Length: 279
Image (tube, rainbow, N blue to C red; front, side, top):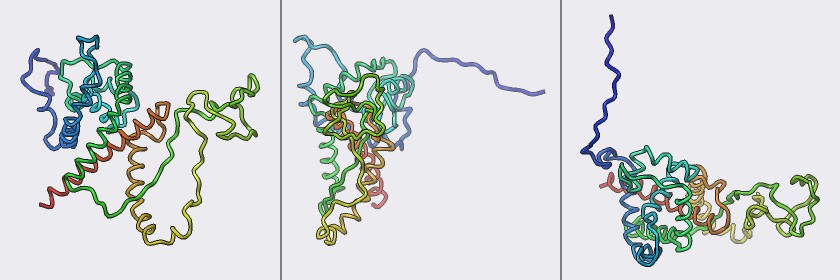
């Protein structure tokens, strides 16, 4: 004879718990959310000018602070689309807590989220957030002025090779995007789906002059470049910008700056933990 517990599900219509109670005290997002909120508090003036008051015909929209936290969340957890993000926010209490949505709050329609993101772009809100995050790192003594390096990385556009057609419109009808054996360049071809997309191939040779490459400063730069490449690597694997899912330089720039702000926040949390352990 065996005894098993009764498989029942009883749900109370009321709860005395807050979303805060469901988030572990040592969860990494706790520190990050605090840093984000400190940065957002400095952006009140910018947010106030983004929306017309209802008395002037403005329509209630997504609070910019909640929208920015949602966009950061999408980067932190490698969520590919706004639709997936809203689907997961529907049932994930951690996501609701981080964004600032109560348990009973309805999630946003993905298209509304996308439209409001355009408003952030028009007011450079993501750049403002990035700057405040960097300022916070400086105030905590986590920045160093001993060295300055510049590097770049290639980001794949949301446009396929077959979308590149001749600028003069001389492609043969019915070619179906076939370009085998045909030379193509940015001077003669452009993408039919993203006018800002370009044909690029990463070079293997250094463009640095020999005189600079042999200098002491360049040797230090080579050592520090690993730190830059770590940021780019995180942005492409976790942040998902290896191939962006938006079109146009302005939107790509917004996603890149947002992703690097998210990377800075994760680094700042780690540095803060190290400082606490060293005390």
